Length: 218
Length: 218
Image (spheres, rainbow over the protein chains, first blue to last red):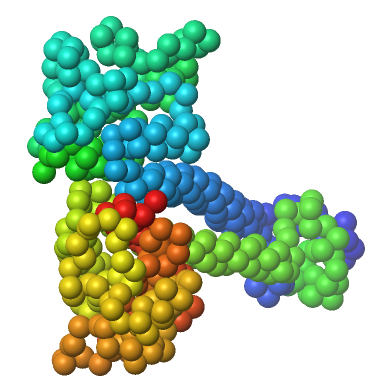
């Protein structure tokens, strides 16, 4: 018996090695076994990469939320120190510009004080019946590219940029909306319709609480 | 040539099948290959479980921080509405009890108002020179089980529990510490030494800004 004969025999009897696999210490066509293990490895690695990516997104979101809240807490401390509407507006505008990075914004107050508090002329619109009615009628924050001509006219002029998105944030004074914080941005996504309004609502509540106190509303 | 002969030949030539493995479509002793793949799978799964556990911890931490910040933002809105020291203390105590879940706490004011603001008798300690000096000397939040007899005596009596940990939080009024918020807890870990003081510092800044305004400090 020589090697050629054995090889020839084995080729002619393809099941022979399978039948005697155990006693000969061989495994046949184990590609399926190995490729299953390899598929498991690949699936696991895919899962790890997916989780790592989700983790990065969640961390970035969480960090962004934290930053916004810290800005609001810092603004609150400034508002807490304000005795007059003028001081409040000064603190608010500084924070909007330096901390929140806004360029075009304005606070307009549509209701009259119940005490002798002075509202700076540039913030008072209670004389303009049409605009006042629109402000008082705002019940929740509006974001997007739609704004009435009258509201847009309240914003400060910015000849260098074209406003592409707007925030119209109602400010509660006493029991209802008494003022509006308007902001505009050249970036259409800055105040895109459908964005979460949670963080601007914290701002509205804080500015409203301070204005209510200053203007003698309870 | 019969099967017995072939088997005998193969047993006598252990390397024969290895030499012709490819042409015969067999693999020999692939246990090592498979166990490597299995080890990779096991390592991947361990990595996934570790990441999932880290993810859960980070989410829980992030959620706890968020909850604390939301409580502070809600307290800020209450403080923003306060016109008097009495209103401020009322808003603060309600929040400490209902939102922050504290039972034993007190605010003590060591400095005199610069205006005609009235400080409720139960909050004023400016007449007690020794205690006032200790309050004004507090420069950062103290946590742990150590507190002076004089400071502990300021806390309201609670016959039902033994205080095991204390918070001594300096409140800025004007340029320096002007008041202290004291809190005690039966849980030794509630105000454990070494805990992060970031969130109580937000509270100190907010309460201090409101008190400074009400008491005529700038």
